[in-house]
Image (cartoon, rainbow, N blue to C red):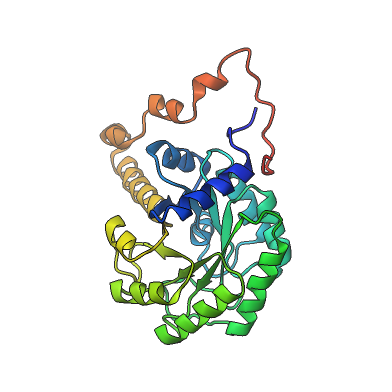
Length: 298
C-alpha cells in the first residue's frame, strides 16, 4: 500500500500542465509530512520544502550546514504523503549537481531550486551574501539539466544577486540562466512590485515569487502576483513560524501554571489528527501497510 495514488511522473506532468494555464500556483512550506497532508487537504497546488526550515528544524542556522542525505531523506518523507507535486530547496547543489539531481529525482520530488551563492551560503533575506560568478552558475544549471532523466522534473534557478550586485546585474543573470536551460527563475529578495515587474519583463519563462515573512520583499497577495505575471509562489517558513510561536506560548503556559488546561482550546484534537492521518483506513483489519520505504514510488 502506497501513501499516494499518483505516480511521481504524474505529479510532475500535472505540475507542468498547471504552469501552462498561467494561473498562479501556491506552494506553502511543509516542515513535516503531516503539514503536507494538511496543505493538500485544504486545496493548495503543491508543497514546498525549504532548506532554511530544514536547518531550523535541526536547530541550526541556514548557512549551508545541512547535508544531502538529511535534506533528501526528509523531503522524500514529505513528498510521498500527498498527490501534490513537491519542490525542494537544494541550496547550492551539495557540491555535485549531477549527483544531487539524480538523488532528488529518485526521491519523488517534482523539482528543485539551485542558488548562485557560494557553498557557505546565507538565508536569502540576510545581508552579506556572496555569489559565485554568472559563468559558474550557468555550468551548474547545464549540469543539472543534463542530469535529470524526466524532462518534467523542474530545474529552478534562484539568483541572490539583487541585494549583492543590484537589479541590473540580476537581470543579466536571469537571461544567462534561462539560456542555460533553467525551466523557472526564482529572483530572491525582490523589494516591491516594481522589481518583480522588471524581472517579468526580462524573463521569458516561468517565474517563482518568494513571499516569506520578515524579509526584504513586500508581501504581495495572490491577485497582485498574478497581475505581475508570476507563475508560482512559495510561503516557505509560514507553517513553521505558526507552529513554533504556538508551541512556545503553550510551553510557557504549562511551565507557569503547572497544567495544560488553559491551552486545550489551542490544540489540534485527537479526532482531527486521526482524520488527517486517515487513521480508520489503516485500522481496518484486512488492510496491511506494506510499503514504508524512503524512496520515491514509480
